[in-house]
Length: 201
Image 1 (cartoon, one colour):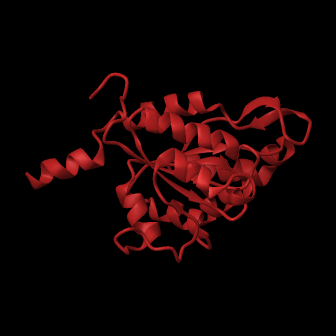
Image 2 (cartoon, one colour):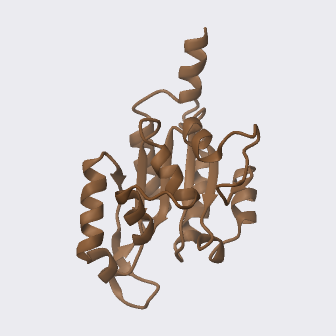
Image 3 (tube, helix red, strand yellow):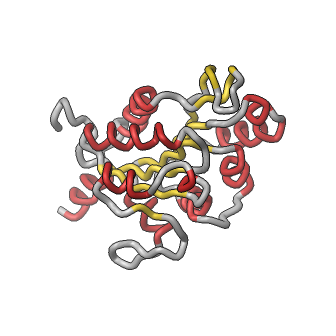
């Protein structure tokens, strides 16, 4: 493995939900690609209001997944095959809404279905981004506690200036910080692709 591309052969499923921090996710995708990682992107309809799929497609050189009804290249069920391929699923930015769905098993759109189908297949890293009051709400904190108990990984949120003009906890961590956390999680095991080849040998 090249030292400048430590994530060669690894696959990440990057999921964007609706928030201004989506612009950071494009930078994160770029950093992952530069590190040698394969990146597949899924977006909610709200995320597509903040950043276009074309941006992520250009950065990753892959089609962007937008719907449960969108087939994969091999016409497999997208919400199953994408998590089977991934060494790690990342939800960044993660809204209060998507975390509530994940904590209660709701799977009514692409991202929530991907999260549910990740069970036993790949770890999930969540990078929350929301208003401070929404982050501190008892419902949100209860959902975070439940997800942590189930083994979901979290990074952030950090303190800083928020899109609403206030300053406080709720800002999505910077792409460089998230990248380092991704490395910590993924490099604990060989990439799935390598493990598959070895099992076939």
